[in-house]
Image 1 (cartoon, rainbow, N blue to C red):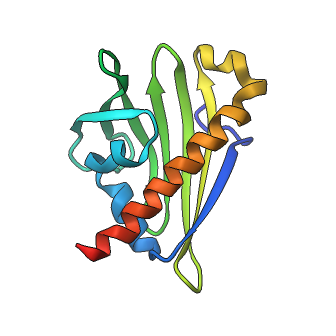
Image 2 (image 1 turned 90 degrees about the vertical axis):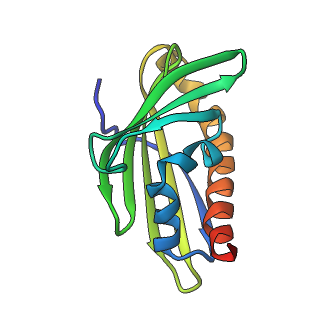
Image 3 (image 1 turned 120 degrees about the vertical axis):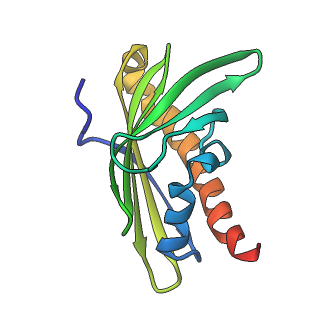
Length: 152
């Protein structure tokens, strides 16, 4: 299993939130289920998240059909990037890269993903049709959290 595919399926979003505000959401592992589509709840977050090697222990699906699994940080730069391996067996695992770049009015967020292990690789030709809409919604949620945090 290669952890760094080069052919990620990418989606983008613009926000008035600063890169720091977006990264603060990503750095709070307890918020993961609020922006990641399909994650139902967080069971635990390793100390030091999102330092490389730390994990978010989560469940995916809808009760009573919950799968307990984890997402591991592979690389983290507080200036604007996070790389993850998200697991959701029996479907498989995906490599995820999030990049946050400053703009004149806030930030541009790029979310790239590719299945790297498990039965999910069998549907690779359909992967863009499944991943793009889900990740657009994830970015919509991430933007709402980043922008909304300044109101609290």
